[in-house]
Image 1 (cartoon, rainbow, N blue to C red):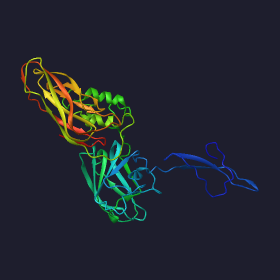
Image 2: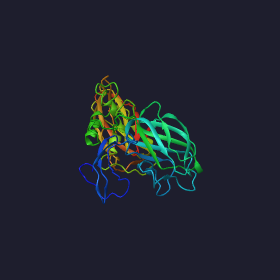
Image 3: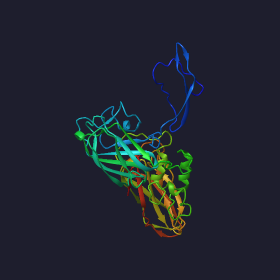
Image 4: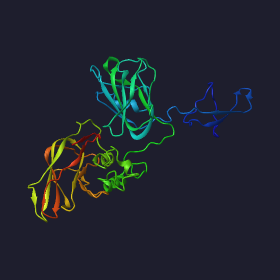
Length: 392
């Protein structure tokens, strides 16, 4: 008897109970039954073992610089299934060296990870390399090296410094047969620590347009501004002391169904500004034409344009060739008295990226007195759908 349910006609020497909670006491009653009758009930007190995967992070995604064999994608490393499915790089292709990048989807204090190779330690078993971690998939800190024996044992890598990170990268320099493979990778956070979502500024455990609204209000905010410290500083995901297109993209790429995850060319290119003339009289409109140069995979962009508010007044933005990008441009007066315009455009969800070289939009300022135009853009950043960034 268990939980008020009577189990009968048990002919084996065991009975399996599933879906029990880990590290939890349970009580069972048992008795023997045969043709001569039944015994008295005997009570058994037991306690389930702790869950070895209690602090393993779920919902992980991964990508590899080496192509996977059809039907053996890298997602198989993170599905909490140790048998029946493996990851394997493309057959008959030298895949080493390769980078295996793990996206934890949340920020965690890292404890360790377990790599489960093929049981036979065959082709693709990872043997040697280094491990790095990152918050933004661009700036990496090395955590150490690994050199594993060729066998089917579980391999353990420990993060001795217990860093906070969203991304982990394995740079693999040796693998059996010059392939990569594995049954599973479990990444463990420090027991008892909480995970948090990058971009979840209002801290409600989800990414939605409420977070986007917060970012829109704080676009261009810098460290040193009165509102920056505290929860807004956690929104500075690439940690450059500025709320910019990268930070907003972390939210925007998850809205409206999210972006496609297929491989794309890494973002590149630059922006430049020009005006029809250099000298302007009082009350004239200064049209600053912003051009994209050799753009590739641009899903978001931003830059700063500092100006003297005694010389200019911001009038507006005229999009020209921005496709479906949303205009989040913000004209901000910083706490230190510096005035800056922050032209910012970001795609929401699945939208077409900017490519090539053409004029993108016009910034319009009004001259408040006779001026010579000599403004320069700074802190320029381009971002792609995979949250890779390029500064210009």
